[in-house]
Amino acid sequence: MKQSQKKKIEWTQFLSSVPAGDYIFQNIPYEEQIERASGSIKNAEIILIGAGAGASTAAGLMYSGERFTSNFSEFIEKYGSMYMTDMYASGFYPFPTQEAKWGYWSKHSMINRFLPPALPLYKQLYEIIKGKDYFVLTTNVDHQFQKAGFQPERIFATQGDYGNIQCEKGCHPKIYDAEDLFQQMDQARHDCLVPSYMVPKCPVCGGNMTMHLRCDQYFVEDENWHEAANHYYSFLKRMENKEAVLLELGVGFNTPTIIRFPFEKMVRENKKLSLIRLNMNEAFVPESFGNRAIGIDGDMAKAVSDLSGYIMSGGKVGA
Ligand SMILES: [Zn+2]
Image 1 (cartoon, protein in one colour):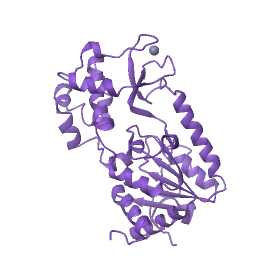
Image 2 (cartoon, helix red, strand yellow):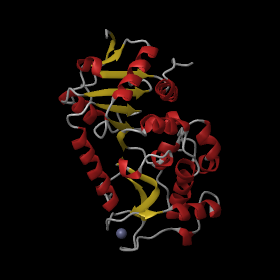
Image 3 (cartoon, rainbow, N blue to C red):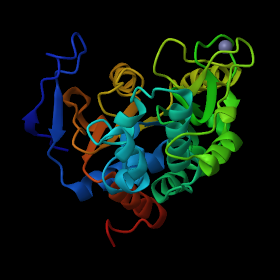
Image 4 (cartoon, rainbow, N blue to C red):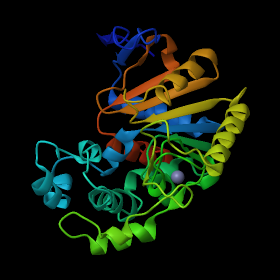
């Protein structure tokens, strides 16, 4: 299969010392990419999925635009559209009180974690891999993999979950399910604030609680987190010496050291592995991987749907 360079990307200037200098956009027609990717998924004995923010954006959980402005109009009005530009930026707003902080986060969590059903992109993905020995490594915190049917013991969500809270100082290695609390807050919220009596306090140190999201050194890695990490390492052991596919979805350059770079390292070092990278705008792959890499750029919802169609029916793309 001929691969030619459309554009050479030089990331090394700002990703110091990371060997990503041979990135290329593959010049292969989309239909051929889908056909090849479907073939390697079908033939793979074992599949490692890596999913980043782009997967959930493509699935429909957009953090900006109408989905943000319609759900958060009250917050935008109260705190200013300068700061409340999207759900990502809003999460970093310096809320002046705990009542304000939980007023926002309970809403954010309802909108992104509790209210959405399993979305079609995730359900199709599950249909594609459910008969395989698979594992999911994800930085997403919206619980979509679990909702779509992926087995919990085959998922490692490294960065937390919108459904859980922890001590703000991580004083003890436990996290707490906040579904009921957020539902109550959602009912009781007034002027973007929750009542003071609903503000959670750490049962050990009495201090403030926070979302279970990795944003500083206090992120709690509890027993389940470590168990999931161990499942992931055992999976990697099982993957050695097998024809495996690493299917990467929507992983950009916010935290490339969790999925993107380690996946590339594995493929670089093990000739039995191949990489399928789905990404909006950043689907370039290392040129040196040759035919062992497929980088499918553009609308991932369509790509997953096409892959699923191809694998299920053996039919043509878009048919
Ligand atoms: Zn504490």
